[in-house]
Amino acid sequence: MKRSTALRLSAVAGVAAIGGGIALGLPQENASAATNVASGFASANGGTTGGAGGTTVRATTGTQIHAALCNRAATDTPIVIEVQGTINHGNTTKVAGSSCNTAADRIELKGVSNVTIVGVGSGATFDQLGIHIRDARNIVVQNVTVKNVKKSGSPLSNGGDAIGMESTVRNVWVDHVTLEASGGESEGFDGLFDMKDDVQYVTLSYSILRNSGRGGLVGSSETDTANSFITYHHNKYENIDSRTPLLRGGVAHMFNNHYFKLNESGINSRAGAKAKVDNNYFEDSKDVLGTFYTAAAGTWQVSGNVLDNVTWSAKSAENNPAGPNLVSTTSVTVPYTFALDTAACVPTVVAQTAGAGAGLKVSDGKCAVTAAPTTAPATAAPTTAAPTSSATKAPTASATASASATAKPTATAQPTGTAQPTGTNLSIGAGTDGSSKAAGTSYGNVRDGKTTTVWSPNGATGDISIKWSAATKLSKVNIVGSNIGSYELLNGATGAILKSGTGSGVITIPATSLTKLTFKIKTSSGTPSIAEFQTYAS
Image (cartoon, rainbow, N blue to C red; front, side, top):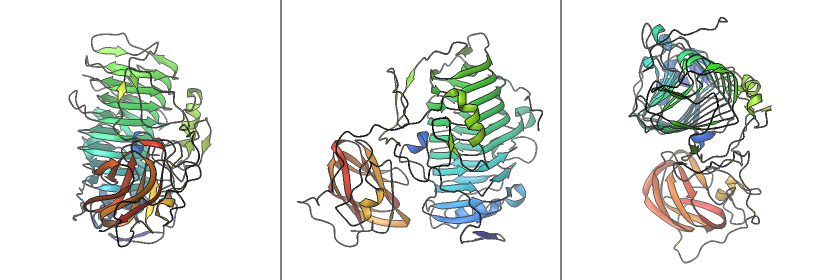
């Protein structure tokens, strides 16, 4: 096991909140709460949208954040919480309610789903107060700084983790955040970004992690290996002793990160883990990739990385550095497309985009910086199952998904031979989103009441969702479409499969209340299209 070491610190050191309550209204300052779209593994497994489509509130204290969670109608009612100012122990208390489970010494997202926490303007600061995500799904944290969270000394919070996730967590996107400490374990700090006990489909993007003994772990022990499907991209790790991350089991993808001054070790793949490491820039660091402090080996696939003044230790029974000549020991396939900046430009791109208060800028995948996209990119690749690793060569990364060679889809006739539902089509006036859309088609076409306009995915498979601002009870669905092979009908908020089958037409399900319904096309017999995604109470 690795022993605690002293950290080498750098020499260079509207919606208005009223009292303890929250008043709703238009935001007075742009929080850019919904200007980015989740990427990486957070875009898989139904996607990660947080509280999009729900109520927006403004909070200036930790107590108000908890109150916003507790004042919802249910634990899965979507909400966007815009945070302004400094959140600390002095303004954070436990709040009770049927839609929350909060605590006084941390920001607690426990047993909840469909939540966005976003810093206003230049970002909010959580000072010595960690964010804890447990038994939760579909969470977005964006444009905030979390600093100096301690597990020993005073004050204590979140086991010393800046952001910690544990116990059956699915689909979390942490974007444009700054996570920092002021030392290592001996100074009272633990990890900056930790995951354990069944956490999956997480992306950390455009963020800064610095001045800590431990960057973060995936799995708390060599037997805690169910944590998987994590993406790290366009982040800067600076002055970190180790764990960037420590990966125990599972699959992780690291691309276009800038690792600077990793003092002891970097990406530590252990216990059968598989790390896909593409086009990163490692600088002034030691043992940036390998299996360290254990004989329980992990593996890695490497391509396009730059090693700038990187040193390596000698191999031993519990020390297996990947360098100095990086060679792949496995192959990993991911279920999404991604645009790779060349490694040489990564330090410049990350310096302009990463961290809270950076304006949510992103890379265009060609070493240029641009404003964040406001809609789902057409290159988003759908996924229908958990990704797998294999012994075959992974496909070359591409900035765009392959376009269909078939003709543009045409309008689809109403299916015949099946009794059609009666009553009000609840999709009219609702919201929509999806995994991708072919040229000339639109998500909104499936709820416009017309069979002359359609949506098609940008490929042979994909998904389309109907969304409501409040829980809506359904028992029948009518898909007016063509070329649809096998499908799954999902509760879009939880990922639960409500029905599976083949073709289009009427689908009957047990009466279910939900805020998002997803139709996932798993196979097709040509270019699939949907003209109408109709939903009915009975």
